[in-house]
Image: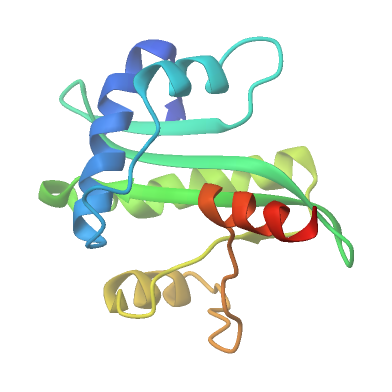
Length: 159
């Protein structure tokens, strides 16, 4: 098993496959709107919108972690872990730990004050994994979002 590395553009087809597999696992198989072109354009170039770590087994990407910067009004610069995904066949092999290690090392290297992410309340294996690594799963917070339609409806109501 290799150590995680920064993803390249050529990894993005497999990254998209793993994103789609996660959507199926999270019971949202039709929710992924992002395209290969989006990943290639947004992750690479002069001002990438995200950083992606990948880990391979036998030259096949079997795990990814996607992070991007955020700003906390209480802490300052923080890093958001959007997704940590390990292929179903490789769960329990240590890939998740290697990816989380890479994310936390990266966070330390860039000097952020916190790494934050969400986990579904029914995903007990992930919750147990994160807690075993010392993460604080804050069960008293709710995630709040406006999707594209919600944004449009909101704006219609203020104009």
